[in-house]
Image 1 (spheres, rainbow, N blue to C red):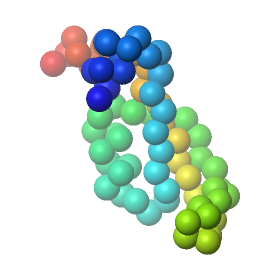
Image 2 (cartoon, one colour):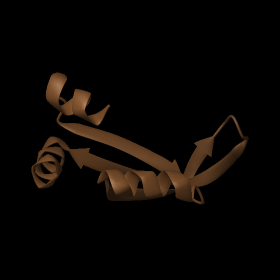
Image 3 (tube, helix red, strand yellow):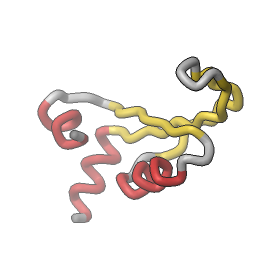
Length: 71
């Protein structure tokens, strides 16, 4: 998906996130090379009827290219 976004579609940035406590999502994003950008302490989750802490991560096209050169 990242290859398609950066190489085929010319996307400059890919953002993703996870809720506090979702360690599997955090770890996947970390392993892929996403970098933390910000945390929001009060993200509404209407489907669950609650508010959670949300974390947002970023990968840029430059990050992606640099990672491809090292593999």
